[in-house]
Length: 52
Image (cartoon, rainbow, N blue to C red; front, top):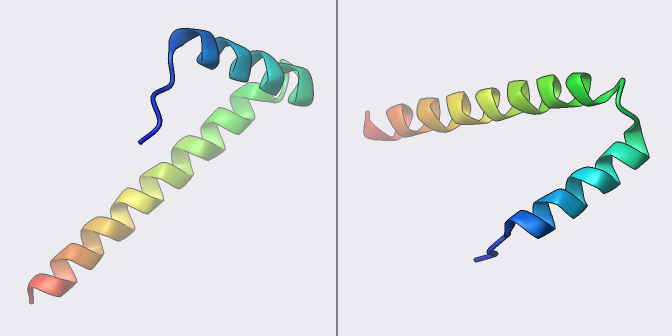
């Protein structure tokens, strides 16, 4: 699909830092982690439900 190299990641991180500021980055990362965790949990639950 998309191949993202180190240069692209640095540019993306700099843009995010400029948009949100350094103080909000930990909050954004925490909420992103929680949403990924919930998504994985929902996918797992859905797979288990389909097996029944």
